[in-house]
Image 1: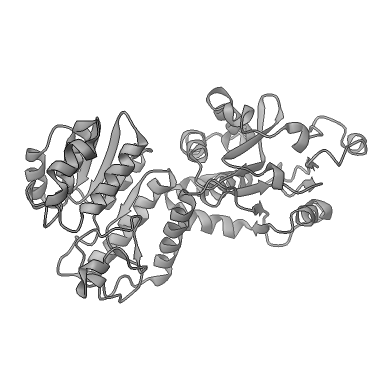
Image 2 (image 1 turned 180 degrees about the horizontal axis):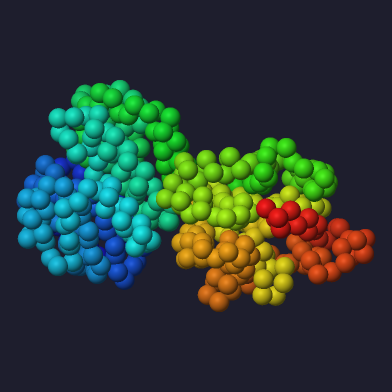
Length: 434
């Protein structure tokens, strides 16, 4: 049985106007997920009623039919109380229309719901007579919604322009809609009502950040390849070679010369959280020790960009190419201790979202560095339920931690088979007093 074949195409497809292919694609992707219980969130209920297929698309009613065919629920945020009342009375108990601003509603859901199958953003409808206010609202809706795309949810953006003073193509020709590169849209199909935007947003810099993030996410959402990018952090842009041996810094470039190397200082780290994960900034700033912030931000870098995070006190002996495959890699430096000193991941991996939401945030008030943000927190979370990331995807500690921190370093370093091991941790201990 299929909702598309048994319900949507015979009953609704030909009744829809320009949105027919949008909804067809939405339902295809939902069915491909093969969930037992679907969660669909919509911003802006179908104001025209269940029979307004040609004009407004009747999205809420279509989603209601979908969750009744399978199982699940629909939540729609609608400011107009009369519309909310109409749609609530015309849909099943599996659909709830809440008379609340969509941005407030989405942000509330962030605190309670971390997995969505579909977040359908119906933008530019705040003020029909005020293009600028509508456009600003659309931007903020997009900013809120990006959270879910990071968590591997589906997001469909409804006609969101990416240029200031951009004249939407439907002013000239409806057939151009959805195909124009000046639109942020996760589907290459026509969708949405839209209108002429005289001025999208005053703060272009803020919009460029959001535009960049959304486009990066769309690019990375279909990629499971680990980018050839190293992420490293230090207090300033000048590495203290009284603490870190130059060979530890330069050896990675020597053996991985086709990789990109990023060094972030404390300001970079905070700005990254501020710009890309502002909902975490309050916790980030609340950490008593800077090392906690340094620990925390590395999970976000790997979630967002993917690549390799490595501490500055590792010395490299060979290229990482043969060890870079897909998914996420965690490495134990003891049997029951998962290190966060070197981690490898493709971007937008669900395990990093899990670490942040289910381990990092709940432990944010723990004063013990190791168990608040460090390997103690990571080990306690990963080992009981996610051991496959260690046993299946994990990389041998013998290759990455040939010397343990409780072993004499100089004596064992001289005995290392450098043709076999990938790297060695010099255990500089720079974090102890940070």
